[in-house]
Amino acid sequence: MTRRILIDPVTRIEGHARITIHLDDAGTVQEARFHVTEFRGFERFCEGRPLWEMPGITARICGICPVSHLLASAKAGDAILSVMIPPAAEKLRRLMNLGQIVQSHALSFFHLSAPDLLLGFDSDPATRNVFGLMAADAHLARAGIRLRQFGQEIIETLGGSKIHPAWAVPGGVRAAPAAAQRAAIAARLPEARTTVLDALRRFKTLLDTHADEVASFGDFPSLFLGLVGPNGEWEHYGGRLRLVDSGGAIIADQVDPAHYREMIAEAVEPWSYLKMPYYRPRGYPAGMYRVGPLARLNICTRIGTLLADAELGEMRQRAGGIATSSFYYHYARLVEILAALERISLLLDDPDLDSGRLRAEAGVNQLEGVGVSEAPRGTLFHDYAVDPNGLIRRVNLIIATGHNNLAMNRTVAQIAQRYVHGDRISEGALNRVEAGIRAYDPCLSCSTHAAGTMPLALILVAADGTVLDTVQR
Image (cartoon, rainbow, N blue to C red; front, side, top):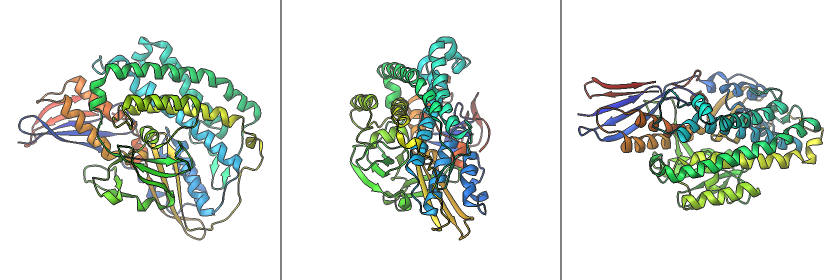
């Protein structure tokens, strides 16, 4: 008799989902499925809209990572206009994306994952949250809040709004910050740097005490995908695609993002609205790959800034080379925050930012365009087709959380096999299954094109439909 456990809803992630864990007669986990139950249909209702409206429309996909969609959409528009945007515009877009990385990674680490990491996976769920973290370590919680605030202030300074800034457009950007505004950002960098270095120090001590979680939270071989610079350096906005395997061998390199369809295909399963992207040459599901901070640090040759490169070297030493455990996503986020802070410092002093030339003017010169950028959660694809008047005919969006879908399902199964036994689910097992998903920091509103807060329940069901156990937040 086959039985299954249902976790519905999953908590402390952005969006709505549930998890079913399928057991055999002996109570052994056979497989697990991460079900995304939301649907909005952004790709369809963009059809017929003018190209120039797309950055503002697609930024509304999500309130956590609107900047990511804003920039990828603007880049798709650049391709359709066939323009090279002015240097100042590119550097300002980069600056906003770095602010986005800081604020989003800070939210993930300090607000969503730190309660597990610092209070304990088996601690009381009533206090295992950001408020419990404030009570246990007010300084750390406050520092994390201020770090996220710093990233949001960069976005607001550039775009006029922390959420959904109407700023990046096909061909460039609308405005540049004044020198005094750049100076205000620079003044907060030392505090932000101190916060992330302290968080890195704390997290590295956890690696010594959480060996079981490191080994079971999605530790398996896979491919890793992301953008890199011309020499393989860490990239977050431009560059070309690189794919490496879990041994560090480069499978594909310097692939023009416009040719992504030659690399990536998308499978559909009847039990989820979230598609299953895979590396086309290896087929489905053997072509599973991961994206995001862990992937970006696994595929790059170096970051290119002093402090972040030192931390990258230590991370690789601790992982024994390529980090294959998804528990290391937390580590990678902190390293990327540090890298972003160093890059922000360099950009603020760039004389190009004083240029008044911020936009290239052109009409529709191509009927298709692809914009690719690295969102905090991973590589983001915006693929548009337009008519000669610039009206959208087709939209395809591949979101970071979608890229990680196969890996998230495998992670849930691995954790369940380690911690779920018999007909009852302990709180610690439930939280670890959820935490395996949180390691990827999924944004389901983006990836399924959904609104609302993210709750998860776990239900054990016999083959005849009898509910054996229910665990619900």
